[in-house]
Image 1: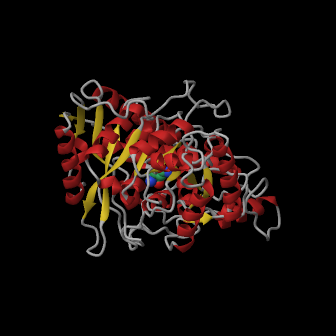
Image 2 (image 1 turned 135 degrees about the vertical axis):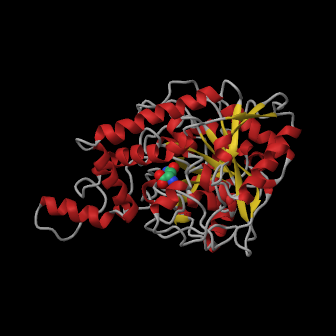
Image 3 (image 1 turned 90 degrees about the vertical axis):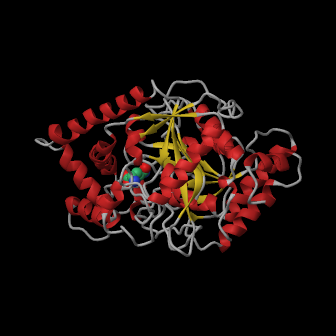
Length: 485
Ligand code: GLN
């Protein structure tokens, strides 16, 4: 049951061959015996209540394609019924009075929540090692990180603990863990998916999206997740879309831009091999490869690591011990209460970013860092527009290497930042991007470590990206492979 696609599960539910309750029980049992640390909160009673409601809807034909299908949410989406910690001690006991729009929309479609998923603290990280609740293991190789920050999300789908999950991507956090765990994920155009109730990291970059086994599954989920939301001021005023509509278009004549800068010396040989093989598969499907250049790619790292911390320092100022979240027990006055609360509640990486953010926004440094970074951001966006005059889609690696070992790079923020080189520019430009499994690298001799192919489209071209990914998945079987139980 846990290996089935959403479409298959949907058919089984609607023909009453399986009930939502049975499905939920099946996945809950798998979660219960898992040692990956992917889930932070499960509440079987609550899950089964939702499943019972879904079963009633299925019985009276009041359902959508997603009714009765289990889903788990990254713990950065606030939920009324489950805690929402954002992977932080600051919110370790926090439960929201309302659901995030994404949670609400998927709930209305009839999806059944399995629980909440581990992630890097406030989504800051690329390995899930910054979670207050401990790292997540990669199901392909338990000595490896799952990627991050949506590491729990990716590991849960890869280990078939959930058929669908949500993630968020600020600079790669859907695409990179999807790549490292061998699953499929899409970060939509900025503004497609409501940020309301998504605990904010860097508001001009944060974007929620689905992660699942295949592009076809992601299309189904995105159609339910995306849409205008008046409670999010940057939500796009566009009509709802069926993102599955173009899945079966054939790819003859498709021009694939292959950016030179994505195949430089920093790219590991095993990753390059798998990505080039995928590009060759696309040629067999009728596409042509076009050499393109995204000249400011390298600058995406310094620009992102100025802009994201700047926004984070502002967003995280709300965690002061007054309104909600952690509050220090001992203090003599208000100022000391703030200081102790924040010193105790935030982890090292979060503190580092608050300091960097406050610094680059401060008087005297604003022009030199923040303003400069914003100008680079514009240049990066222009590079993409230039590239899209020559091609229909851009492809390359998601990450320069396969998943690294647990414990590795844990004390080296810069080493982590450099590994984001291929994902940050898409986020800075606000473009949609996907990760599709395309093979395995060497990794450790004991375990296989997956490689992801990145697809980048122009604004609002999610349906096209999903089509391009789906056609590849019809012709190959990487997305069907799964780690040993
Ligand atoms: N790795 C990047 C960072 O640490 C991106 C994280 C994300 O997309 N949330 O900020």
